[in-house]
Image (tube, rainbow, N blue to C red; front, side):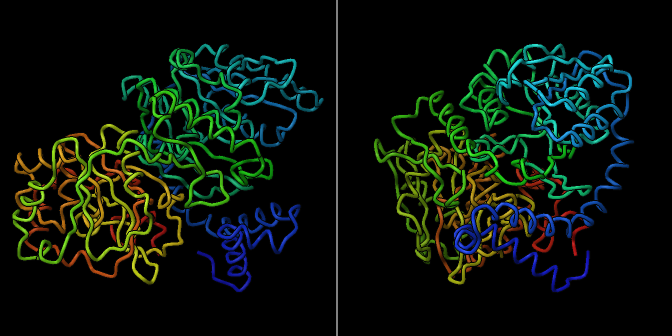
Length: 558
């Protein structure tokens, strides 16, 4: 890690201010200069941290060379790359080199679309690439845009799977081999996606180690993009790349179409794709494509239409990320689901009552099977009045969900609980604990609805049918109300049901909720759940499982 010099600190502060407070930026800097300054600050800040990532990645790449071996199968993969006049030629050349080095036998087809190009140097280079036998160069007489270009590639591809790759991005030299291995060992699924990083100049930065497939996060973030691996025939069936209104979000639209058709994606937990950061790229600035807002709304509306939820939910800008193109499915105040509110008092959560009695009383009060049981500690001050409507909306969108909870912060603005990870800390804790509430978290996930292992019982909403079935099966016989969220999280994992974190269920409390959990109960919990942790479905595998190593790679743990 480089020494912290005054200049480095100033650049980091500049980046932080521009990223966190767009209003401050707009007041101080003319509009034409904002993008340039933001990119400059971000580049300096990211390059400062690039060496640590490189130190971790170098031995990992060596391990991958030994793990992923063999030759590519002809006819399995087709890379699709639309090229237009705005394509930076230097970056296209780097992409071509990264493909050629791993495709020397020509087993993978590369579909290059001349998307209405007129520049002499671009056309000349495309003709040069077309000399390779495995390059299929096709042409649109006019630029059909991103969606139109990818649709043309999809219709002309010969491989079983299509891999959309932007013309200014880069593939790791073992990318195709890793994709093939995961396709075959996963039983040829309809859809796959990989981890990714970004590249700025010669530096790889900002690795995104993604969760396994999470439909909740999918409807909050296009996290699956780069690298998407799509079954060609299924893509044609679901109408992939057919809606020009999704021009700015073609990959997101494609994955939502597959999900609506009943397909779940397989996660390839390897960084094999680099998203290049430059002034015309959304990797650097989402504002470079002003149509992004409308295209994202189109994608999310497609899901509402497919699920028939338009009468109950609507798409509005996220109240947690003002000024950004982030969205929220807002529940309309109609047709409420029956609910039972249970105030968790000091008497109910007494540490001496941890062997089942309060839980038994809770079950008795939980109402019929169609009720939602709302747990709320008397120490928690709820921040939003519409929290219950938000929980109802999540249950409607995700029928496999059984419990929803949110974020708790203290009066000093420090997060004390949130989405929990089974196997983290002393058994089941929140890796975001200790962050300031203004921190958006790892890839903004503290402000995104997403699946988690468990949530805190001090503020949670539970399906009464699930609560009752867990109690009747004996899974809660050693549970206290203070640690009920963790017990229900393990029960949900066993039953293949979903637990959701939503930042719209937020509260403030200075009470130490962990103090309610007896040492004996925690020991019982660890023994009962030992076959399930660490739970790496939604917490990236490479990261540490202690407070000091949360969201950190082994060689980044300074």
